[in-house]
Length: 388
Image 1 (cartoon, rainbow, N blue to C red):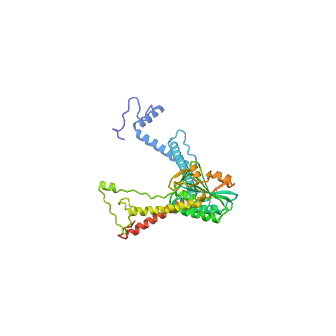
Image 2: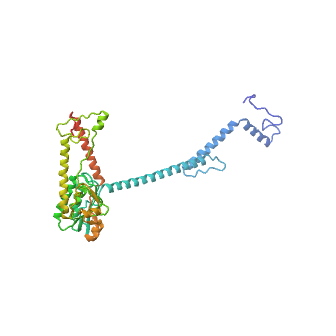
Image 3: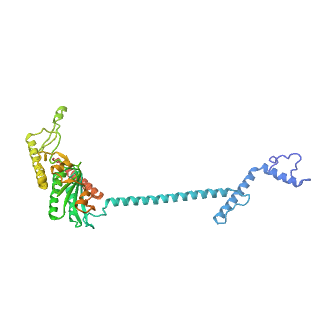
């Protein structure tokens, strides 16, 4: 340090500790003055000491020696350890929570899968096995009688066959709640009932009407030994109909022209956008009369002398259950429980109705979709449009 760089010496303070007359207090004041004159050197030394102590503490912690800071030492290592422990604990809690949610969702998925399996697969069987104990067999016919529905001839006949075949069944009840439907499907069920009654002559077969038994529903009921109704049930409607609309007048008003090309004179019969042809109308009415007569014959064969002479009996009218008993269309007022308990003397009722499960519904819809797609693919390869 040059002479110019040396700090001036204040009067009364010696410049050297060895100066004459300098004591211990003078040396301490000299060291303090040097530190005050050069603070950066002191700070660097203190930082090195702190870094050294922190390194020693970190090595001691890693070596499992505790890492306890010396008294008066730096607290840097302590708060770093606390922060690290908090981060690790938070991460561990998040992992545990994630694991719990994962387990929860797995169990939830298994539960949903179990419900789907229970809905798809019928673990009760097809109802063709014999039940234990004397009982009353029952089959339910609900809704419109049509192909592809629960009230189709295929479903009802299979249920009736299982009910009649059970040797423990004291009798069979067909519970009907239907407004009618296809005369073809109703006729197939009626024929099967006659066959089963011939095959099992000692097993009584009764029909019990709930809300309604009209048109095709009564076509089926007419094959029973007896028919029981509620006094407020709707019974009858012995007739046949064919309905549609005619828009020719509206088309003339708005200026719409119908262009229909057919390869047969009657191919466009009953087209709602074409004028009605008198001879086609006569033909349709003749066909309806023929089917109506078939219906009348079935009812007369099934009911026999129980029918009362009434000109409106086969006119398509319907009556209450109480009036149906008076006309001979029904035999009495009673429920399924009444028939089973008081007539069959077998109070326990077993339902033999074949129920379609979800798998069968999906299969039918998938098959219909595949058939439709195949038909469209075939039609794409030809220029001739499909004919109706």
